[in-house]
Length: 389
Image 1 (spheres, rainbow, N blue to C red):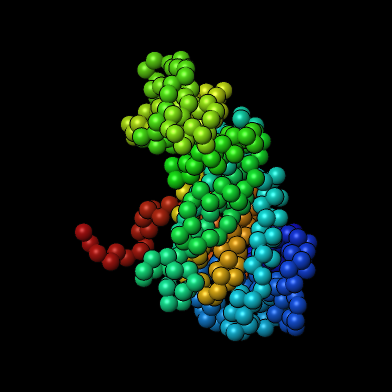
Image 2: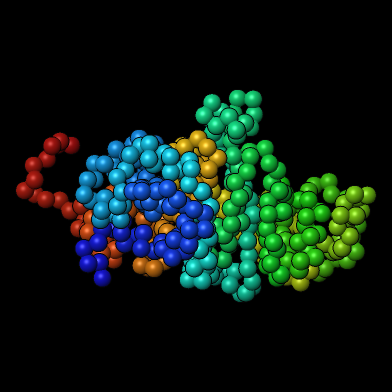
């Protein structure tokens, strides 16, 4: 039942309150805090993300304008620009990281699995990174180029459920395959990577952990063919071979057998070469796994377009990490919200509707109910025409 709760309250009830409280105690979030709690900070930042606030001053101005309605949103403390700024810069970002991880664990159990991947009955992840540009004058600790600053968000993305499961934020100069050192490969899981992650030593560590990887092969890779697998004629799979690396360095880093699949994309007519350590799957399934990697690119595009991770409410590394993890929390909130209420809208449409109805005391199912609009093309003969054509 709605029981007169605002739409904002109905959304944030999905937050794992026990996990959040444990994270606050673990990282000392309430130490020397009198009025503006960690939950107040989180709700203010969620409000800023949902309503499209682009700065700290704008967020505080809008929250003050709400007056007593802030209480119905769950915000108990007084909101001031300096208070929210200090909270973002000083309170440990791991509070929000642990909260996001708790939400992700719960969501992975509840969300439906991609129909094309369900038959594999395995964990399937994509690994990629996105660079977030910063102002060098405000973020001198993140110098990236001569006149540019940046950080890089490295993400492990669950392709089965369509949500991120792990994130590390690094300096913008950090190489992509650094992320492979930050994860513990799961036996039997698939990791889909682009060519930027080809490091045969790290890939062999994944292989010895009994995990599988699928990536794009480099063009001038030196290898010898051990066995040619049968390929259906006139199909998109051009060749399927078992190979061994022959380069003096690469064969020492990866001494085992690899599989090289050459594939012609039926839609784009692009020739692709996939490299994997899985020797059993159908070649078309290997191509499908790599095609599904595009979901992580769509995730990066979505959060950059619809959430605020380009302009930050603080200039310290802690403030940047806090805002990035809160953006992940908002993304998972919207995905869970869509699934729990069976909404047929796209995520961006749900976010837009929430942004303008956030203070309404309307049940979610009623708010998102489809309206049967009358045909606006029907002519009303009692209405005078403005132009006679």
